[in-house]
Image (tube, rainbow, N blue to C red; front, side):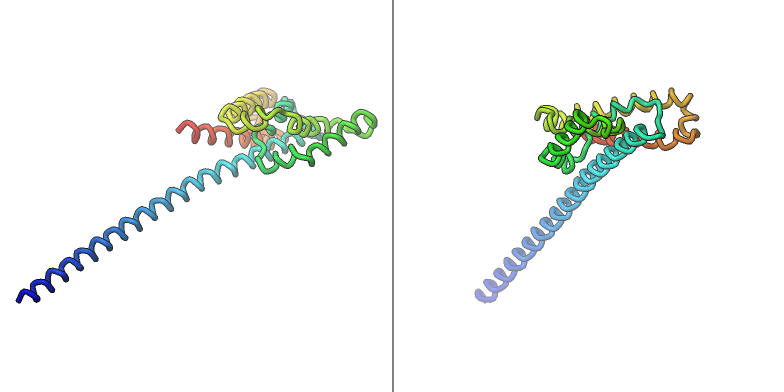
Length: 204
């Protein structure tokens, strides 16, 4: 009789222990799912910000090229140089800040000084951008670019260019109806999407 009671007690303890293990494993599974969801969510947000940064940079380059060709507009496109500098993706920025950018800068300076007839006007802005990337101090190239201040400057530049473009087009409606206005307006709006999104994420 005593052995039977002992056996039943051991069986009951084993059952309780098994239930506890199952409960712990279930809690670990739930925690792992939450962690995976949070990682995916944060990764998606980070990817979205990086993607918008690439879009904004290439939109600024597009507007810069557009204004240096026969499609000249009345925008102050010189402001696109600091915008591109501040929003340029880190991967490409590191490439231009290294030896590749130094060689480009050297060729541009030599051509501009000794062969000015072979240095077209439309190359001045891109050359200035590459020079800015190469010679800028670390405070601007590393600190300001990675802080919300750099993003805020991009937002100010985008807002200013948009209002100047609308004024030059003769109103908001004309900026979407004129032949050159549509492409410029869409390009400038793309300049605004990245800094607005990045600042919202920063201050939330």
